[in-house]
Image 1 (cartoon, rainbow, N blue to C red):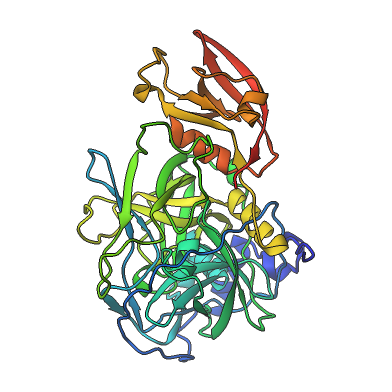
Image 2: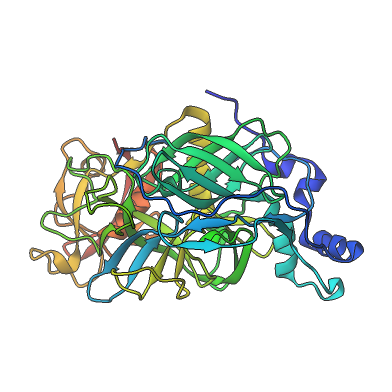
Length: 469
């Protein structure tokens, strides 16, 4: 086990530069211009790899080391491939794309690192300042195996090279278990990295850049304090265009989605992931990648996530990148987008993107860094949406308990078959996906308050969660 890293807020003043200070610095520098070329990569399209199950791991708590601040410089990689996992919403014609940038059609950009350009420093906006402050903490991640390749984004956690990203980025959507990983930094350096651990349940992973000692860690905000309508700014490498900045607002909080996972533990032990004879709200499958035969993939299971919804443009390649607030602090890790393009082809942002909240991301990251693995809560109940439960006559939406695991957390708390769970730790529960997402966001052994309806009467129970294995 490694020592817990320090919190960035306790670091040097340079690492916690305010937005006003950033704007003043930009004005005093008279703008920032294009940097000199540092790297070149060769264009190419690479077929995907054979299926291989990744390892599962994760974090809890949030404290990361700081580092000296560098000039804001953005590197654009020469050629990257596009592809993704897709899935449709039943009856709605909507698809969710895991936003990694994997094998498929190529997008070609300038190989030279470029900077945040400010042509009129006196009129620089808040978004300009956020981009200048946070871009050095966002990297492009390049993943390859013997016959597959792809890219995504990452957020720097520590000055010595720990980086947070998505599991589906480092496993190429569950196809690669032993990836070769390189990282392109904001100032154009191309560095080797290794996978420290992955957590498919939250679709988060941590990598470690070899020999790094002067990177700029990102600052994290408290995602529990977000409001709908708050500014949301995304930085990452959509379609391989590194250092891309888009902005919007927080469109919704505690939005529950179900997406394909690189690996999911066996959940046939009475967990709340699936109800008997029930269907998840989303049907997911793997996108057919050019050059690969249509064979079953490791990513055949699904996970439920409680996410931040935003209308900031997010596209394949943004996966693992930062969603930031108006102070340049990370509020989420971009993970998926919705698309009206259907399941037959790839589409871009329609203004419905999703990010894993920063509080959960930090918990997972720290556990991976400390122990190499993570825990997730288990309620020990099989549940269904009230509308699906033919035995249920409740007049309120929620997750109806169909079965209880003997000796599980729900039974120990006094919950019974037929109870309808309507809130979990104060968060409204409209169905089984909401409940699963909220339970999984907590660590094993965590305490929670469950509000439920039994025989038309509301009640509460305190639950100590078990451990998902």
